[in-house]
Amino acid sequence: MKKLSLMLAAALMLAALPTFAEKVKLTQMVSQGWTTVADEDLAKQFTKETGIEIEWQVNPAAQHHDLLKTKLNAGEGPDIFMIQSNKWAVKTEIDAEKNCIDMSKEAWVKTMTPAKIESVSYKGKVYGQGYFVKGVSFPIVYNKTVFKEQGISVPTTYAEFKADCEALKKAGIVPIFECVPDGWHHVLWIMQIGGRFSELQPGIVEKLNANKAKLADVKGFVAAIGQLQEMAKNGYFGSDYMDNAFSNADAAMAARQAAMVVNQSGAIGSIKANFPDDKDEFGAFLIPLADSQTPQSDPNGPARFGYAKSKHPKEIKQYFAFLARKSSIQYKLDHTEGWTAIDSDDSVGVEQHYLPAEKELFASIPKGKGGVIWQAAVSYVNDQWMDIGKDLSAMFVGQMTPEQVIQAMDERRAKIAKAAGDPAWK
Image 1: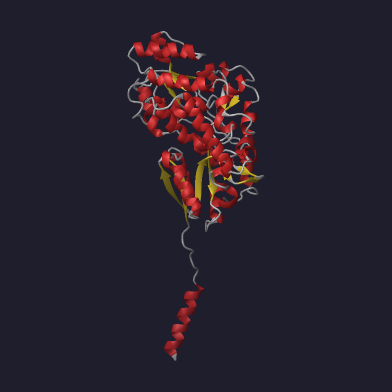
Image 2 (image 1 turned 90 degrees about the horizontal axis):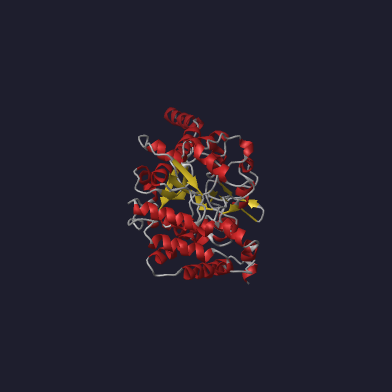
């Protein structure tokens, strides 16, 4: 009896001890290039503060879209996932109503800009969160010192740009660093000048989105793609553009392996930071295809979403709230190479760090002039980004014409729109 009493007492003591819940681990699926050291540091800080771990699943850029859709269609999505967001992709790429946690009532929503909120919303509900680099979207970063040595100046038309490239090529300098294998980068040349097409043809965006016009009808579009084809054909990308990787862009610029690259203007800072012995000076100017001198803004950018079927919705919201703190947003800006400004709402009070070369670029732009990148303005374009990249690659090697590239884009737009149930395509 005494032994039984002791056993009962021991059992009661064990029952009285506090129990510890199993550690929560959130999986976060992203495309390569969307995760930086700053993001990983913030995830570690979050784990230290809460005990909730973040497990990164990083996919090759060319595969991320398809892998994510496969998981979502199978009902096996990761806890958190990222897409290159816009107001159409929230439906067509991830079907947010079905697959995403409604974040509309979360306090952190107001830390995003109105344009960003629109890009992560569907039918009046906010599903995603994102903060992206701010400024002129993907201009051409160039070596000022090389330009000065060769006696060439910043171009404002395609003809001037072509002349500059010819002069550099004649001097034995590869004019432009391009990296086709990444799949996405060479598409920037034609997508980042969307405001120019709107300038040439006012109202064209509205007609495209209402299915009252096709991309083949856009003034200047076929010409711009033809100019891109000419650049490759004339050797302005050098001989290695089918092997180059975007991750090597800064090194190539610092080593004078190329005189220009399409990049965020803040990359000027990362070149100087990573190659402090480099004495060259760098600047930025607008992509002049189709004679564009219209600065482009990008209200979209990568954004993260919480999976509706996750077992940990509370922890996902906790993580999103942590990332939306002013200190977290500031940390991401301060510790992300190539970023000098971030597009959080002004009310957050983040300290921006524009470079002198960026301020010089801003000052060169006529007051009140500006446009929106094509993939953010025109429906069902961003959804086919990697496919456009494949078509442009085929064009570079003579397998497609600019007209055929546009025709393929139009055909995919119609297919995506119909699948999304867009009434304009019924």
